Picture 1 (spheres, rainbow, N blue to C red):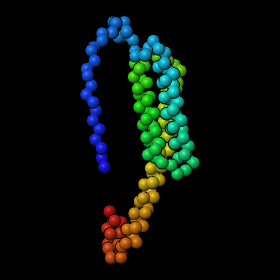
Picture 2 (picture 1 turned 45 degrees about the vertical axis):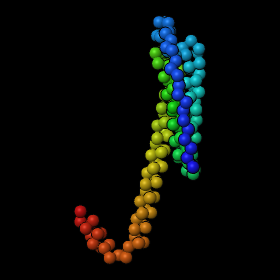
Picture 3 (picture 1 turned 90 degrees about the horizontal axis):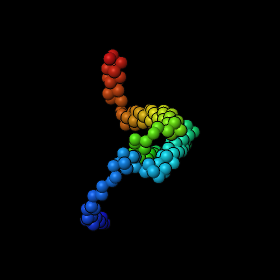
Length: 150
């Protein structure tokens, strides 16, 4: 049975004017927590990507949906952390971490591509075997001859 939940109406909050100096600073700029949060987000995403890449490389049975969900969540966290960095001074350490993440994502993409190609080959072989087992051979020669001429 589906339950419906209603969201209580929110009362509008009065607009607060920020001092002109604070408006030009990135959010959380004074707190110093942006960079550590960004590093944690990058590290979390790297760990998930490394785990998935290793599992694919070792040909272990894995739940790709679970990895996809975890990567999506980590990417959302990373995106939110990056929004807080807009307008901040570039950090060479973070740039190196992002470069490392990029190379790990490229390796992960390569392994996923190989995995999908293997799945495609197997599914093609299975569908061909099923088609052949269900055929009585009536049209096989005509189709094969027409296919070989083209």
